[in-house]
Figure 1 (tube, rainbow over the protein chains, first blue to last red):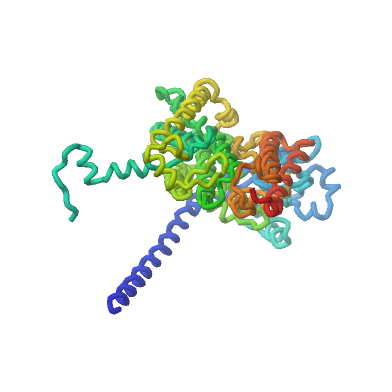
Figure 2 (cartoon, rainbow over the protein chains, first blue to last red; figure 1 turned 135 degrees about the vertical axis):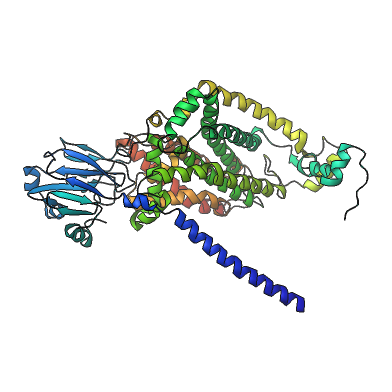
Length: 174
Length: 404
């Protein structure tokens, strides 16, 4: 009886030590898999917005992801609906469709058909219009908009300016 | 201390220290296998041999492979394929075996379903087998990343995105798995580690469990007959080898097993030497490019059926259907409510269920390979719904089955 309670105590003591060790190891393992500081630090890109031709899709790169920049034509600006205006990025007097060029379904890059002014994702057949809105499922939502900050005629990707914060707050982008 | 005597032979020396004779009996000469079986009972041995081929070819590939985003593609496609003497052989063996192993796994699985080998004490064999299927799938996926071609990159992108779980938006989890915003160096090195160490360790452990799960219920037979292994083995050892319903694993069953393995290996090396193209996707011979998606992304053939269950639905429903397809096979021993452990051909409605499931999965596989357009989309949707309906119907179909 005396012995067994002593063993019981030893078992509990070991359990406590092992428990601390397990929790500590799990924290270390989780942190080891986090993106490295160098990866996070390289997360900013500056774009000069004066160089883009109208109606042509240009793909830039930010955090390894493709960024779609489409300077809207006068015809596109004229026919914008309210929801499309809300996604509009205005730098100076130019209007842009700015988006992370990955399908919101599972992340393939949709291709742009300039004649039809629409995007088609080859992976699962999702479609988007020139303003970045979904026209055919499976994608669950319009293109995501990367965090941006307007500085004169330049755009800094990775930093959240007031225009971006407003879009995020109103739920236009995630 | 145990008492040791001067050894009379090498065997006696080993016997005193390792009980080799006893081990040989337990593992081979007195491990009893029913006689009433056919060539489908050799699939387990074929899988073991194929796993060995993967291990050996993998060891040789590992000596030249570079897990670095700049060098990985060239270390595989230039160094191993052109510079290293017989490097192509290891790669062809590894690629062909990775594909063929799934063909055999599916045959092994559907043999088990047909003969009811997941019932009456054999549930753990089924569960450990399904866990092996899951780890083999993870092993295949992680290995597919390593050549760092276009298909590697985009399969990595799409599959890791599944972990955001659609509408739940676990984007932080996806970035944590990748160690970056997109698949990059951290991603490649950790999947390299998973492929060559952690997952093979898990597979070896599970193979041990799978074999151990066989010991007590023993191997099933062609009629699902309940054999008294104790009595039948006594009969065999007493000399009535013809009258006994069982035979020794070694070397009686083993000789039959290896006969089938031999035929399989001829077929296997025919593929390795003359027809390996199916296992090496041409799109993956372009180096990974994060700014260009290939026109058609499709997984290897063995994942097509579950991919096609994901594809026709909107993202959240698709993910639920996909999740359903991944776990539902595991629950088979409990979804089948019938006490009959006999071949499907003698089980009434279950016979139709079995063949419908098999055909449905073949249709899903075919549709998964085709672009998601027009009539293929519709057939895919019907087959995906069919898969779900079949599994939901299973308990009701088997509940009223007559006792055979």
